Length: 258
Image (tube, rainbow, N blue to C red; front, side, top):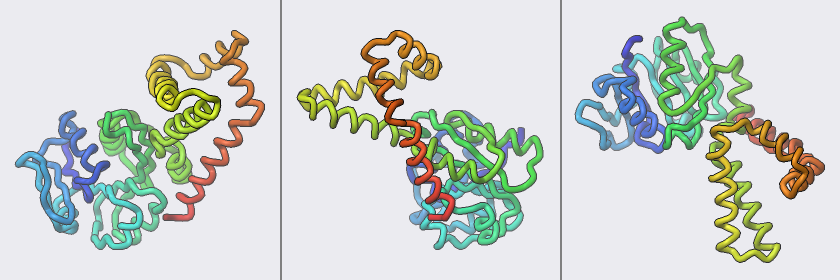
């Protein structure tokens, strides 16, 4: 597979830096084929990684350009990426908009999440243009450097998944908050409530890494014990609908643009 030259605009931010470190550590890209740009033109990469202050210079030297910037920063980004492939990690900015503004030949939208830091991100990606098999495999391997990835069939999937997998640890963190709040309200000491909720969210997540969550729910419901009563109460109060409304609210922001 070709060792393409990758330029990451915003490559010293938390997301861009995590991806840069991952592609280097995995050997997917060699240091001499990685370019980073930021406002200062400095960074703590090895000597072979070029760090630039000029975004256009990075584009000119790269075969593939990754935009690891916030959506609101895109309005200020002035680059000519004619003939290049651009990978956008921004929520709410359509592929057509990116193509029009940058002149890119091919635009790929991807939505990694905060778990890039521990190489456990799930990254859906969509290509708004024809891809050869070699390019498709290259993109898949790129995103797999920080976890798992899937090519999705249309851009709407990216907008919806921005509110699902793109939220990263946000939903487990919200569950943690609710568990602590309710335990304290029921008279459990604050410190113990936090430790108990942490065990559920963090410990439970680790256990589910090797189990089928749906099978586990079925088994617990069949046991008809304390856990089953709690799960049945959630089901009776339509937890699916609550989560669905939350996902739609986030997806709507992505669809209408940031």
